[in-house]
Length: 174
Image (cartoon, rainbow, N blue to C red; front, side, top):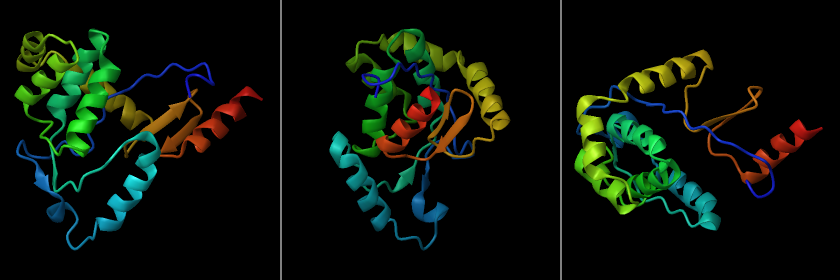
């Protein structure tokens, strides 16, 4: 869409379930009795045109360290690459995005300094930034991810088809 529209994006961290323990929590615990098979089929149909495959996630991971690492990636100009790597690791490879050693390895894969990242995570360098992002989310009544706010006036909640974004962006041009 950046080829069709003049866009700048700013990603703000939002930890959907901050109470998630470090070892994660089983989806069957979060959603007892739910059959998630149809949900994954739907996600994979939606992701197919973009080469995105969702494996059957069994455990929700604590994302605090991953969100802090993403803030570090912003500061070194590697946010989008890091975000894509972590997204793929979590949803396709079923990796633990709370594991700082894995985060460092993925950072190194895309050309970031793994040691500096680990230092930032160890010192909690980005915790204040995450707290500020949380306050912003509360102020904007954000309760789900992803949530997209366009020009401070249009809010799109959840994964939406590209056509919905195009329609909303075109409405701003009028």
